Length: 393
Image 1 (cartoon, rainbow, N blue to C red):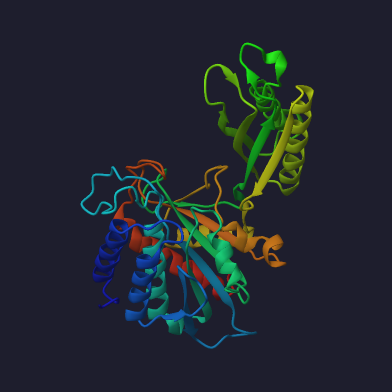
Image 2 (image 1 turned 30 degrees about the vertical axis):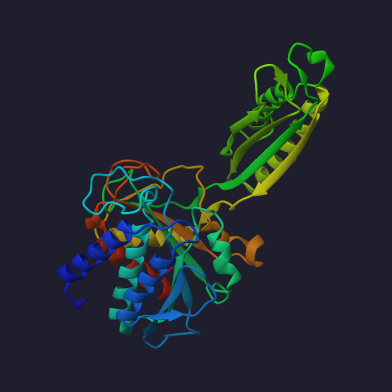
């Protein structure tokens, strides 16, 4: 393969992208995906580092230029690789060959944008010094795959980390970027409201957990309006309510499940406290008991200002359009790489969106990527990473 020939490189990247799209694998099942990534990197002479990961892998590209001052630096690019349990409806010739699984979030695009970037950096290795790690991460949709990478000590020598995501809200090649928080902290709660079961005709013989649970739901939705600063993005959604088995029995228990999204660390702590207090005290007022299980997810992702400005600068140089990254309370476990609570230190990070053609939203069964954006995305990322490792950030 002649990677110096831009047309040939583009065809190669598109052809491999279509392979990944046809062969989706769910979180922590990415065995064939990992093997294919390893095969492509090895064929290109790119080193795969033997970190203890069951799925996913880490590759490195080294610059050959002598560092002008100080020690050589190491930075990283995260590319997630897992698919979703969705049956594809996109009318494309390379649609998923596995019923019930598809790349509905663009992770196949992330894989090939990352591989393309690695190929370009290797071809231009004499122009820069240092090391770039390419983290092909499993289990992002599970929201904890990044922790697998961190447990393998992949980030011990990394000074800064970059991430990308497909963006179907913008035209192909448009870069979405801004400083500050760009994804929310994602937490989950399960509330079990325990009453006393009885005949539906004699509610006075028991304690109705459904009535108590409905009051708890109302109370939970008051937290954001009465406890959270009105200028702070935050959200609570109750997404599952389950109780009872038949029409004439008041059950002994009702269960609620939902999610809380926050950007501010103090708000995240406050929300956990208030969900416990609200559920427990309202349930008690109805003669019931509430048990709250709080499951912490990924923290909020924060884009370092200098890194965000570098993205904008490189885009201008390359003649690419930039737009402010959309406000979203969606989450991404990319934030684990940055968060001091995970590693004992903060690592500056930047998570940018690359327009893949306006179309169906991510996680939609007809979502698809404009393949023509893969090479421009790789070229853009290569320039960003070389500028960063060269001390221009």
